Image 1 (cartoon, helix red, strand yellow):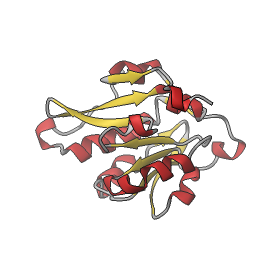
Image 2 (image 1 turned 90 degrees about the vertical axis):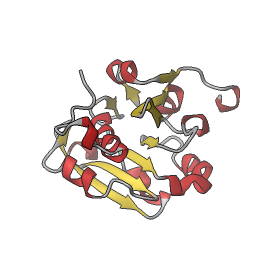
Image 3 (image 1 turned 180 degrees about the vertical axis):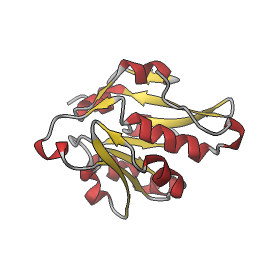
Image 4 (image 1 turned 135 degrees about the horizontal axis):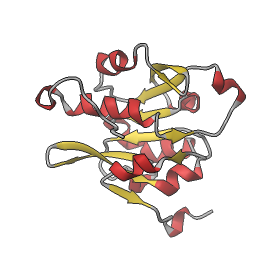
Length: 172
C-alpha cells in the first residue's frame, strides 16, 4: 500500500508538496483512541508556526475523508489549542519552543510531525528527512505509543528509520 501517489510527475513536486501529501496519508495509517465526539467531528490536520504548505494542503484534503470524517486544515497561533488536532505539524519557526510544545502535548492523542532536524530525538513522533533528494520520514514509536497512538505496520514499513526503544530519561 503506497503512502504517496502524486498525480503530477515527481519533478514538479516540491518537498513541501510531498510533505503535505504525507500529512494527509498519515491519517490513514494511525489509530487514535476512541472518543465519542470524534465520530462526528472533522479530522483535523493542524500547522503550528511557519506554514510552507499554503494552499497545497487545503486542495489536497478538499472533499476527502479519513475514517469517514471530513478533513480540515487549521493554522494555529499557539500550542494551547493543539489538543483538538489529530495531526500537528510543527514548522521550523517553532524550534525555539519545541521542548515547551512537546511538553504541552504529553498524554494527548496528537500525532506530532515536523521537518526540524532531530525532531524525533526531541520528543516528536514523525520527522521528515531528505534522503537522496527525496522526502522520507523517520518514526519514534515510543513517543507515539505513550500518547495512545497506534501506528500501522504499513506506515512503519516505509519509514527510513523506526526507533522502538524508550530512552532512559523518557521512562515514566
